[in-house]
Length: 335
Ligand code: TRP
Image 1: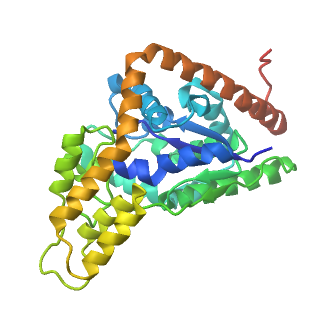
Image 2: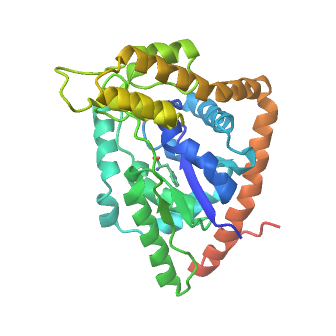
């Protein structure tokens, strides 16, 4: 049996190149080797202030985007179609201490964001307990590996602690401890401020939308910050970022060639940008095409995602049934 890999993504904001090269591309590769499951986690998207009217379209759009990127639709689920996740999270809440949740650095960061955000916003208790829901997302499929970025390391550690505590409390080695998969992934920085990670929340100038038109991609690369201040012997973060993007597109030879030129002092940034822009347009071309196809028959694709969520749900139900037995809860009879 191939091992199970699971990862999830929140339907907040559009997919940009940072998310694609930093996560999704790797997911596409992993699905061929592993029993892979990927979730669009809409319950997580409710932990920050959000727009009710936009959540459903955002969830579908993200699922479409993932398929356009090359994920197999059968491996994708939408979290709210599998209510067992939130049910398991409640059980896990009873096994998670207030103290360990208080140490989550992402909670501190995000609550600061909420406080900056507006007068009616408040920090919800869902934001506080959200790592517990994440643990449920992972353990409900008994996933062995979780491909995530370093920013999720603490949540993975918490997931392992919860699994261990569950096993201890119930006296059964029920959950295996999942491991993070930190693969070597390019760090894509903002093109407007290359000292910061590319992120949608920084604003339009900072990230390149994965589905942007070729013209827009080229234009954004053209206006990318390169050298700031005096050019020393060290490569500036902006130039380094352009090189990372080029490498991420898989053009190793060109990358090496331009890299050598740079160190010989012969590289023109205009040329580098031209090459990076072309490479990005080429890499994203099939993704744009597939997305256009999906949009021409949204209904069929939605039905596909509903069906795969239903199939994946069966696995979640099996785990939850056993969990409820183990912790002393009456069970629903599903069939
Ligand atoms: N917390 C993750 C993030 O913010 C998203 C996520 C939710 C996740 N559940 C997960 C990631 C389970 C991996 C596994 O990016």
